[in-house]
Length: 458
Image (cartoon, rainbow, N blue to C red; front, side, top):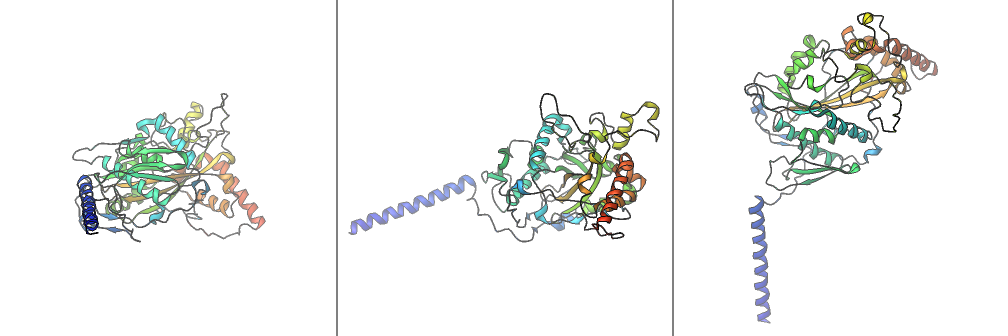
């Protein structure tokens, strides 16, 4: 019996020693054991904020930032309808930044149109190349490059998406010998899979801006602070712009982007407030804003060979509004571009220029954008997400109160805003149609004369 106990004790000692050796070996190989994921806080936690508040222009101290917990979306992507944004108001039009605080859960909003967006964006990546996705290098003495911010962004998205949409995204993590982009002390994500379409992206080897763009429905722009305090467009994936081209704006500072794009009243009302806002923007204070435009999409006959029309609603580029994308003149409002291309030379500068016959209510779309802005903690870059929605005007007019409110908003535009947003091409068609739909709603009791309530931006 004594012999059996002695043998058992020695065996136990050997087992414990082996276990300890394995522990130490793994710790030596990985640097330390993979930590357990910490319990995310209910509110974000950040450090080094004071240093960055008093920083020199163009310098950024990486902040230690702990993200708050995210509520998982419990349904499949195919069961999520697009959010019905209606970001227009009754009465006077005011030119403002229009920002609101953004809940962290709502950084990226996905819906059942994701699959079509992904198809169009994948096609645009293949056909537009650097005209659609590009990351600029450092310009010494002016501004840093966009590569760190691009890599940080794709990891931020991967971390967020698989937590917020767990039935849509799966991730695999690498070893602890990485660059520290993982959240909550975990190794950083190596691959991410979009489960419903079976596509996997490698975050270690593929272009980060391209992967980031294909993971979501939004376009993306990264603004990096220069040594002059201005914010430069240093990396972007602008695949669904509709009315502007990234090739015309990449590398420009924020104010030049807006001025050269003829954004109405930018110098007078927006320049100073936007400059101050960007400089002071904190890592833990994301914001969101909405805007809207009008566009038209002419019907396209089905190809004789039976191939699919890739983008029938002209989500990526509004050819029916702006003309050919490659021939587009930067800074020229789309309706003016279209007039120049489609009317005789003798009428190009005349108010008698004909409106194309496809400009009818059935082909007019409300194009609205939901833009989020947040500062990335490691690079300090400010990232825009730009999610575009298209809603048919004939569908909108079936909603109670919308025809009258939309007509009021369009009529309130100052001349420069009207030119920028596209009223000139549509006003002879759109406004009479909205007025008639509003009149019918009043008759049916679906709208009340003089009632002007708006639950902005819906």
